[in-house]
Image 1 (tube, helix red, strand yellow):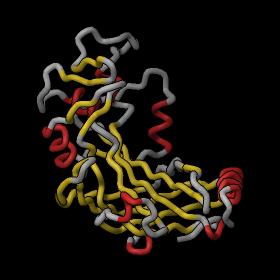
Image 2 (cartoon, rainbow, N blue to C red; image 1 turned 90 degrees about the vertical axis):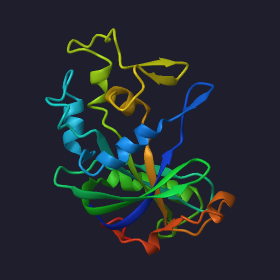
Image 3 (tube, rainbow, N blue to C red; image 1 turned 60 degrees about the horizontal axis):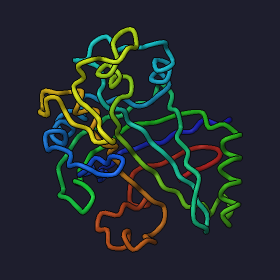
Image 4 (tube, rainbow, N blue to C red; image 1 turned 45 degrees about the horizontal axis):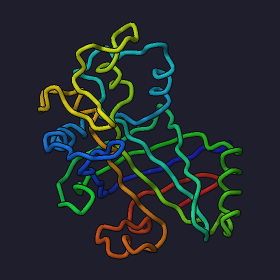
Length: 247
């Protein structure tokens, strides 16, 4: 096992999806949901660290005060791949000593899939990178036709609704379904009751995963080649220090 640290101090472009997809159809995500995210992300988020999973594993955990509880969680994933298609995804569980500061900067515009946000991220993420995980990642890259030191790396920074909070709008203290939920779901399509900015349960339920993707390699797909906001790892102030991997 080795101590791993990722240090971040830079601006990143995140994508907020325009639509929420159901089983067959999709629907537009209301503007007030997007506005709620931009106004609250800096002060109502928490790193998805060990403390989150400790609470999650408690029997019927419920937050004490919804007015102060973090509404969004920050995650980071690493994807390692070789010359062939595919790759292996690694989602570290960060130590409780990890820390981040977030500052929403501006809305850059939109593309076919979502609205583009510029967000400043600064801080340190740390975790224990186990030898078994490293061996699994190294083997996967080698099976893809590359040596470990040739691995292509993709980082995905992500904000998601807090999964410790969302059950409060679906179940009571005894774990039974709430009769008058603030939303309904039909064939995967979410509808708020009512559908306005006062309905926190609906806002969190329909909020998408908000991603920023940074890659260690040049654009390869046709979509990436025409993406003016493609983010290269070499151009970002984000660095990893570990016995197994450094960038």
